[in-house]
View (cartoon, rainbow, N blue to C red):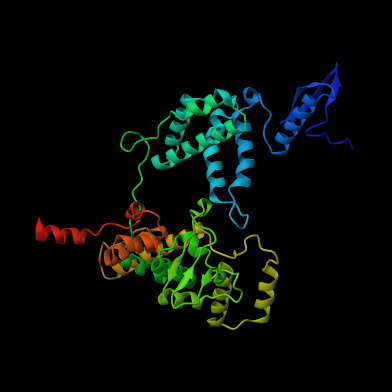
Length: 412
């Protein structure tokens, strides 16, 4: 077996000068450090070695690097940088990967130094053709700019490349072919109540806890007893991971008696486990189905089921719900509720019925903010939702139109 090549070999004497071969992405570059055995060559070698150990790319490599190589190098950086406190990857990594797909198809093979504003606008048109929304396109174009900004800091491309890309402005509403999205509005409580009978007890409790506290879907999925302060009559939930944690912000959520009763029903034995666990939910579902079984279990039936059962199934229930699985459970429940409403309408001879509109868990946070704002004011909604600024709360908490109409009727 051949000896592995050093990523940064020691200097050698070449015609009285100290030189060293630097390998980067399979390429070799010879760097002259200075006169052999001189103080200048020793300092230059120490600088290059420190840059190599820090993960910095050798200088003067920008003209040789392709866009694909920039993306691969950035993903290595992203998988180390975008991590939660428990060392798991954040959603940013997957968002960058989705952004890179059309970029690799169009410009992955060209030198990164040749990727300019025109190429970025062509990439943006491809995103429009893919059916992405305008806000999402602006977000992902911004991610492409951030990648080249990082590449400039690593001396992979000249700074002029990022400066040129920064001149491309975002798409404006109503002035582009990109699809526009509807704003996230609160969901009516009657629609939530119509959905609850068609979800499992665990998901039903998650919906009610989110509606009572205003936490985000990710936070209700990650609720654990160890993250709660239960010393007072009102519990305090301090999520270890939240939206602004990387900015040094802390978040505290007050949990009242109604939400406490729901959590106590699903409290795990281990305080480090999650309140809402798909694994425990599946076990309870199977136990309840077995208890409600009408026909007896014959020995041949038991043996047959044992032979079919897999010792190591490919898909096992997780320790906690993901936001996507939480959303899918709600979407399935809405479809079931509408099927039952359609059957009931047909049974009574009606040709039409009022369907439950599709909604997702993030709307529950908006509903909670709107409810608190109507009863206690904007500042109270800001505190409940955990916003630093009131203008952010106005996005989540819809204005009370009924109050505006009442004032207009009396004074207008």
